[in-house]
Structures are given as structure tokens and as C-alpha cells.
Image 1: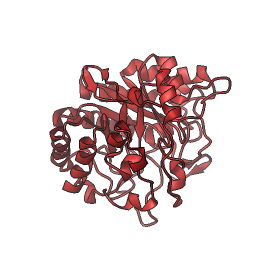
Image 2 (image 1 turned 90 degrees about the vertical axis):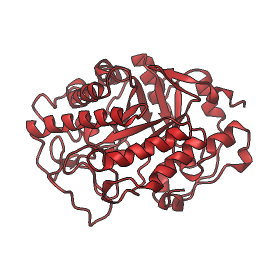
Image 3 (image 1 turned 180 degrees about the vertical axis):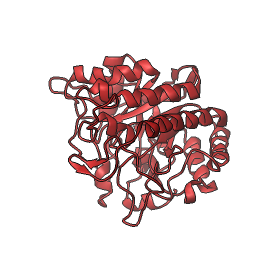
Image 4 (image 1 turned 45 degrees about the vertical axis):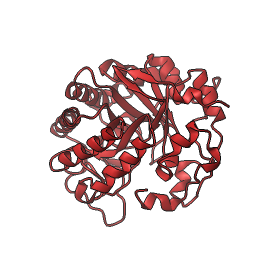
Amino acid sequence: MSVDTLFRPFTIKGLTLPNRIVMAPMTRSFSPGGIPTSDVAAYYRRRAEGEVGLIITEGTVVERPAARNDAAVPVFHGDALPEWKKVVDEVHAAGGLIAPQIWHVGAARGQGADWQPLGQVDSPSGLVAPGKQKYEPMTEEDIADTIAAFGRSARASRELGFDAAEIHSAHGYLIDQFYWSGLNARGDKWGGPSIAERARFGVEVVKAVREGLGPDIPLIIRLSQWKQQDYTAKIALNPDEMAEWLMPLSDAGVDVFHCSQRRFWEPEFEGSDLNFAGWAKKITGKPTISVGSVGLDGEFIAAFGGEGSRPASLDGLIQRMEREEFDLIAVGRALLSDPHWVLKVKEGRQDELSAFERGHMAVLH
């Protein structure tokens, strides 16, 4: 099939992307002490040179003592900010666009058995899995400070010249822990039986980030139904529940919904072929990004178990985008392996596309 659909420009809030391909945020753990290096800047620049429409960085954490679970995950405050400015400058010099993914891991497990958080772990109810309590719930002061930390990182993003920003609100990390009844057992205004009640923390984070960015910079939020604690978990079991979840976030200032699935082609609800991003667009009327094992024949969770993946057809993706089911597509492992993936697709060089191997995650290619 023709790939022209992937290479139509897309404009949101005055920001025009040259094509519909987004680099998905992927944790790389190459920032010792939380400070991104010149190698990190060069890694992102190569993707800009390869004509990625929008680069979303790996998750970079807000200023809370236990916001990360890996000592080499980058931070987005303090001494790291001048280094992030170098990343922005490198990407812009190559003609690219870039957004940071602003993150807090909450009570998600650490990378490696020896990882120790630098302070009290933040989580809605102290649960690390349904029914398994390990920490104390966040206090009102903890919650207020965390929301403010997201706002400070958003303001820093604007000041550093990033083109957009994304809130990481998926995959069982802090904000997602509030959404999920399995980990949010609070009886105050930050919890409750309804999705709308449990979404309140996320809504307040969105408001703080919106204020930090200002009105004109696109704000993306990443969401998922699945959790690293439970791949089968769902926040919303039907479209009405999804509306109850997404509409308050939309009203608070989200411009784009980035809807994470393990396999983008799978329908979200019975009786419809629409995937998660398709339903989010239908419900909110806002643009959406789909993601999940794009361009490869194996899904990404299996990669952590050592499985490689070979290039796969993009025909199904193109058909969905021609139907305008969603607006943008995020590509992860294919771009991690090959910074020129977009150019090869654009120029019809499918025979030159690279396979993905687990070893690719161990280097900044």
C-alpha cells in the first residue's frame, strides 16, 4: 500500500508536524545520576535527522524524592535542565520537534534488586499490587507537592524550548495507580468507587502542567488500560466508563491522548473494530496517538524476555489511518533499532528495515 497517509502534515495548537510518525517514549537508563549526557543528545538528534515527526523523550522524573526507580533514569529538575537544553538544541538543529515525557513512577518496582528509593515512596494507598500493601498512603501534603512538581517541570519544559510535553499517566505508574481501583483504596476525595473520583489526581496534574506550559504549547497525556502489575487490567470496561475517565482530563487541558496498547490493532471493546485510540478520539473529539508493536511481528513485552522481532507490514496501520481512526502513530522498538526507519519507510526501502534484538536496548544506537 502507499505510505502517503503517514506523511501528511499534522497541526495541533499551531505546531505542525511534518508527518504522522511519533517516536514513542522508551526508558533507556543512560543518564548517570539522572543527568542526560551528550550521548543522549546525539541519540535524539539522530532520530530528528531521520525525519521523525515528533520525538517524545524517555520518561524524565519530577522533583520528588522517590519519583524514579532507576539511578540512570533522567530527572527533569535542577542540574539536569541545562543538559536537557542541549538535547533540545541538538534536535532543533537537525530540524526536529521534541517533547519531554514527565513522569513519576509511584510504587512501581525498581530496576534491579539493589535499587533503594531515595525517600518515602509515593502511592495512593501504599499498595504495590491489588491486596499487597508495602508503603504508607500519600498525605495531602505529599499530593499537593507532587502536583506542584509536575507543574514546575512543565514550566521548565516551556523555558527550555521544548515543542510540546507529555504526562506519563499509564502502565501502572503513579497517576495510573490513582485511576486503578486495584491500587487506589482511598476513602477521601482522591479515591472512590467511580472512575471520575479516582481520576481527580490526574486532572489536577493536568491543570498544573497546563498552567506551567501556558495556553499555546500542546499537552499530550499517555494512558493505558494494561498495567505492568496486571497486563489484563482495565480502567474502563465500556465506552461510557471511558468517557467518565477521559472527559475530565480533556476538560482540564489535554490536547492529545496517547493511547498505549500492547498491540495497536486489537479492538478495545466488543462490537467495534476501534482500538483504544479510536475510542478516545470518538469520545473526546481530541486528536489521538496510537501505539503498540508497530512495524514488527512481535509485541514489546516479549522483548523484555529476550525475544527479537522482524519487520512487519504496515498495511493494517495505513488502512486505519486512512479511515482516520486515530491521527498519529507512535513507533518504539523499530526506531530504537534504526534511527532511519522513517526515511526507509518513506522511500520504499522496506527491504532495508532492521529486525529488533534485545541487545539493542543495551546501547544508544
